[in-house]
Image (cartoon, rainbow, N blue to C red):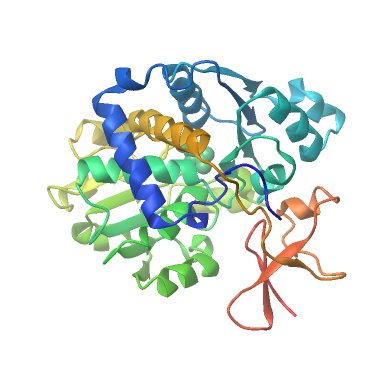
Length: 360
Ligand code: NCD
């Protein structure tokens, strides 16, 4: 299904050259933001946030305002017609007729993809459940480019809630496209990286290992990406409490790290990094959040400057086949075409919205 507009649902829908150009533009904007102050004069961005957000929403809004554009939207769906049961399709249809670009965050996997099917302007995925968060990844890539001067040859430790953390899913998919990156997944057995992400890493020629203990591997890392345990994505409070506080980065652990390792975190932090680490020059998470504005300015400019649209659904609808993932948007909004692609072999289907696999 072809859309007239260029959407950003998953970075991996684009070639690496597209992201590297975008990151380079982010660097240029950071150096001379005033040069871009009128690039979006007269344009309107709508931010539809169905889930809490501080940085993503405000950095998108700041980015548009710094480009000379204006903003509309909601950050509390209870104050919009969503509370009356309006579907994503209808909300998107209407809001995209008001705005030139639409940014959506939603608690359900595949929601931004669903929005892109009916939108009359470009849609940007600002986080869809535990699935993906491509604009955080652009922020992370820009931070690595500025602070480590490269996107290749890095040993990256990702620590915490790797199963539910959408930021680490998008980041691994992206960084595994660059040469010689090695991933170390640090988590409890319950919170390991999903198999489909590990398969993508391997298919892209990168390597990964999985460990339980942060202090055993911290000394080998160039980048440590800490994450919050995603309380809201657990089935019960007991399950969350069992995982809480497993990994805490403190001054003692930082003593074991390389002098030039950097610590990233998409934020918000709960208790996985102690405040004393903030004073360490290797703690880069506040800078990373600041760079998010430049990354999103570059993204808005790029998306609005594109000619030609995206393919929203590439797969096929199989009669009677539906996604088994209860957290997939196709199980929340019934009208959506239940579209699947083949994953490698002929017996495995992959949901186009949430990437859940299904044997046929
Ligand atoms: C992250 C998110 O929302 O996925 N935050 C962000 O966008 N900066 C990470 C998180 O909530 O833990």
